[in-house]
Image (cartoon, rainbow, N blue to C red):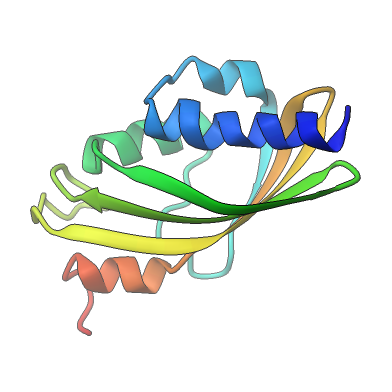
Amino acid sequence: MSLEANKAVVMRYWHDLWNDKQRGVIDEITVPDLKFHFPPGQAHQPPTLHKWFDTSRSAFPDVHFTVHDLVAEGDKVVAQWSYVANHTGEFLGQPATQRRVTDQGLNMFRIEDGRIVEMWMSGDSLGLLKQLGMIPS
């Protein structure tokens, strides 16, 4: 696949799945045994993308991602992103706080045959937990 085609798959991940809430996109753009790589200390480490989406959507139903940059080389695409959301549902045992939260980070995706097979995630989990009042600032 071309670099542009790989970028398009990643943009579907951000826009179709997260921003447009099209859960069915998961099965179109990822393989069933998608491999996640979380940084040490990541607060939320679900076993599947379906679970990640469901948990996040329940806690932050209005989450909106902005992709600021995409860089592709070979079978990898790196995305620099940010999001804003309101905490209106339970998250990690914390009841809804109604707080507006923000985060930013980077994800790297490995693409094979038009589908995401591996994903590395790096965001500010500590900052998110502080914004939610789950740990002191």
